[in-house]
Image (cartoon, rainbow, N blue to C red):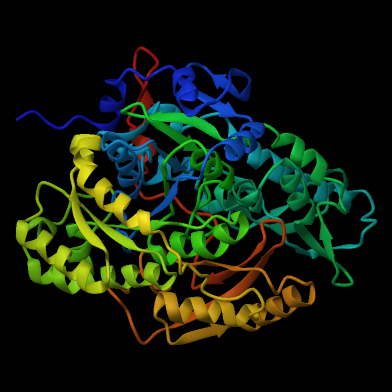
Length: 569
């Protein structure tokens, strides 16, 4: 039996359609998009307004997952495969998906364009620079950083407190050595010495702003509202105050346009923005979703990690900002992950799979389904119907799959469908597509947010911790308590909350698997994201700059003799 081809080999084995043909199918005029080569394009924002006025809005489907293992459970693969499956059963369908960060590409994942025969292509472009949006975001962010230090150097007219500079630097590479740094060393001409930090670019507030902006004026206004520092008198200093919001917007003028690519089966895929869900809000852009919804019967969008992370933020942050409402949701589950949550085996990225995870054990799967039930319950708490997608592997036993289906229905899912979309593409997702389409027809007439805008910030955090994570409560450090009071005093108390925590547990502790109980969530600090329009609560020891593993995925990435990329997977 020949080995299954790699994702890169599969992607290269398909001849992409000219992107102009994909654009024509969507109803785009030739002056409404800008080709980047012949396989990808950027779409002008004017097209969105025209198409929204001309067409009914499609159904809006969110893909989330159970608490993932370090290998991931195939959420991106299901997002792409489901869009392909929906097209196969006769619906105009598109996927909207985030662009991956170079940090995970060269760190753990080695690629994030989907997998097998459910991918977005061109695979190399998708995983690397694409159209340069992430670089533009990093440049805009670091321009504000440079303006801050330049202001300090040239007399500090606004009275910035150098000990309370809130704006970090960013780079889209995982580099733990940059988490804490001292800059401005070298003498009078080299700036004012101060402590700072680097975050990964996808954690930047500029990335969040791009993903949540409604249009270019809204982007510009949000940039102006970003709080860069506090003055000595405690007053906030914004990007508008430092006269840097305008040039930041200029750097993002092209980046704000959604990117149009395609799936392996030639259907449209919009790739735009890439915030992490463990440290940011974890969803692709509102603009991409609006464009897709105006040109398709149904749109499948992805939210990062489990439903406690990306899905909660999709509902409470993204849907608040967009005014859009979901019609259905998909929870992706795998046998191997549920076994792990049932106390069997251990999964370590870069190491061979534990044999216990490929040995038939329906009892472990049933124990692990407590985690699945929690995630189904989280989505249903918002009033959204759920379909469970069982992402199948050749080592899955029928008895194990039957347990997942049984437990899914018992937890309140509308259906549970086994998929083979990794190996079969859209053909392996037709059953899932049918179930999702049926669930989406009724929609979510009772959709609601988890908390009202007027609820105090501390109570919002407590509500997320208790009702979504299953915690007994929240413990705020004195620093977090002071920061909450400051945010409220500055008029930010009505904003939604984005919790930064581990993705590997429903709790704040990665080691607590399954459906943990009897814990309290420690919140160590609060970050004001006035431009993005939310408050970030830092829970546990969650960091905003990842580190590389002992053997980064980048060790295997190289160029072959013809200059082609190899090693992406």
